[in-house]
Image (cartoon, rainbow, N blue to C red; front, side, top):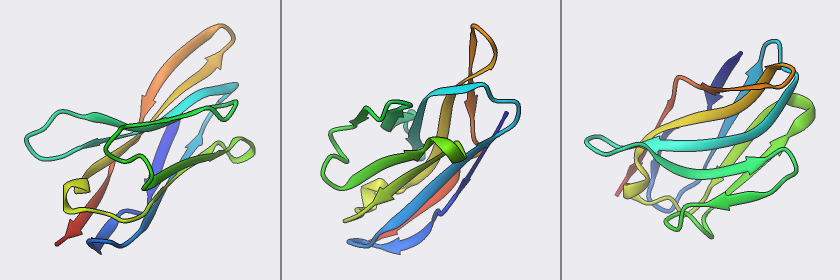
Length: 119
């Protein structure tokens, strides 16, 4: 299974970016997909997650500004980021809980995409 992120870049504070994460490979089911981020010198933290049924949850720091969504048919997840702040600067990683063998779920990570918000 491969997770490929795209959509990162440099944006001014108050701007928007949309991240995408596409999963490919011998996938039977994807149960949950999530975005994490890691800023320099900090631990990786959960930003937002979405289940295959559409249930979402967000870190308090991004509620009201970020929206996670998914396209089950395309095995793709999105993160719409609005009203970006300099403190949102980080490498953003895609994570997925995937079943490639019936009854067995494994965790996969993408390579990360840099998001830089200038003040």
